[in-house]
Length: 109
Image (cartoon, rainbow, N blue to C red; front, side, top):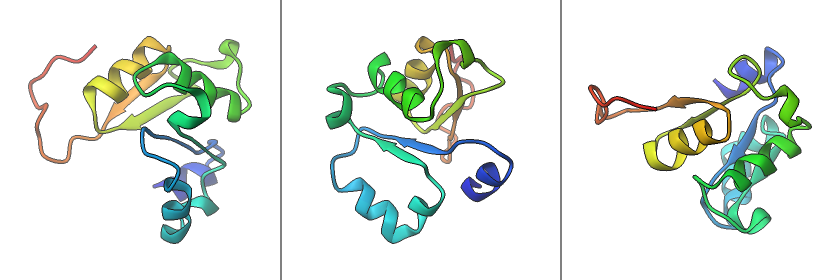
């Protein structure tokens, strides 16, 4: 999926609450060949859902507030509290990955 997005012209980046080991893990998985950047809490001093981590990701993608919107940017994650709410509060369209069907009938923001 990441390769398809990058191939279609999307800038792919990783925004995570993980720690400094993540870039090496992603490199071992082959993801760093597709992702242009990784943003971690140590880069911006905050965790998702804080707007600061999303703002840092947008800056690393080379985007300004003028370009953010549901057509130009989206955030994919598996946590309603960290990913969906954080993205919505940052003006970004969220995409919830719900592999276990945990949120089937949950109204989302």
